[in-house]
Image 1 (cartoon, one colour):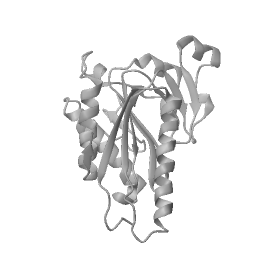
Image 2 (cartoon, one colour):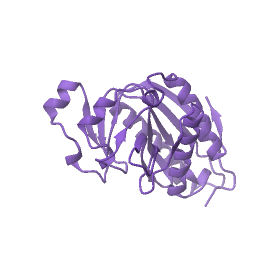
Image 3 (tube, rainbow, N blue to C red):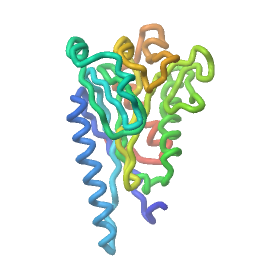
Length: 238
C-alpha cells in the first residue's frame, strides 16, 4: 500500500567520519522514532507524515557480519584485529560480512517505503541502479551480477569484481542499513575476510578503476544522493 498523501522528501544527514557503533545507534534511534510515528498514526484521524532520511558517512576500519553470514568468513582473530586497528560487529542487517573504512562512501537510507512502494526487492534494485548511474558519470561501466546483491564491474565474467556492497533491514516497511561504495579506500582490508561470503571474486574501487585518481568522497556522495532521489521520485532536503 501507499499513503494517500505520501511524503516524498528525503532529509540528508551528513555525519562525516563516525564510529560504526555510534552510527548504528543513531540509525536505531531514527528507526524507532519513525516506527512510533506509524504506530501512533493508527490512533489519529489526521495522520502525521512519516519522514525519510539519508545518512551519509564513512567509518574507521570495521568489519560487520549480517544475520545470514558465517563467522568463518572473518579470517583474523581479535589480536589481529587490534593490530590493524579494526573492530568487528555482528549486526541485524541481511547479508554476510563486509568491511568499512575511510575513503568508502556509506549511505544509510531510513525510508518509510509506504511513502514510495512496498517491495523490498524493488528497493534494492533502485539503490543498485542509483549506484550504476553514479558510476557511469565517472565513465565506469557497472552492472548487476545475477544471483548477487550489489554493484559489480564486468559482471558475469571471470573478471567480475564488486565495487558496492548492500545489506538492509526492513521492519514495518521502514528501512535501515544500506550501501557501501568503494571510492578511494584501502582495499587490503578486504584480504582479512571473504567479502559477502564470495571467495572467488575481487573487490575494487572508483580509484582503482580510474587508475589511481578519484573524485572526492563528497562529490560522489552528492551525485549518488541525487540519483537515489531521482529513482524514488523524491525531493532532497540538504
